[in-house]
Length: 163
Image 1 (cartoon, one colour):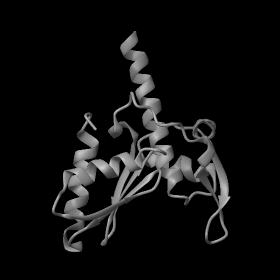
Image 2 (image 1 turned 90 degrees about the horizontal axis):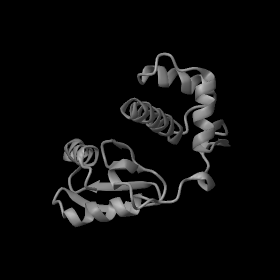
Image 3 (image 1 turned 180 degrees about the vertical axis):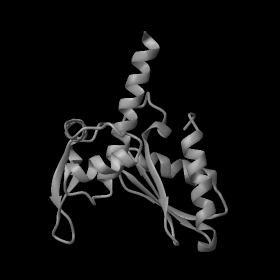
């Protein structure tokens, strides 16, 4: 029975993580848009009421973005305090890149610790690392290899329970 409860808890945590990842992008102005993305993300039976519950659990609010559109956003006052009993990799939300750099999205309060770990790795491919409370910006030494740096960071962060 304990395994079934743990599995349900893990499923709920994955739903929360996906919802958090979607909200962090600040592209969604309706719960239906978020629900549609969650369906595409592997939750075909998710209801609007479940999305509403997830948004409430995350402390999400609507804010006006740079284009003047009201979008869902994480409320900075609602972020959980860092917990030292959790591995740092459990606080990972997403790793993405463009042609120039890599961004690592973390739960609030964890990005600076992640940046320090990346600094300590002293990878020649990394020119520099800057962190806010929830985002780590990684600049590659050579932008021609940003995709490879992204893959290396993503593999390290998603598979390491020691971090």
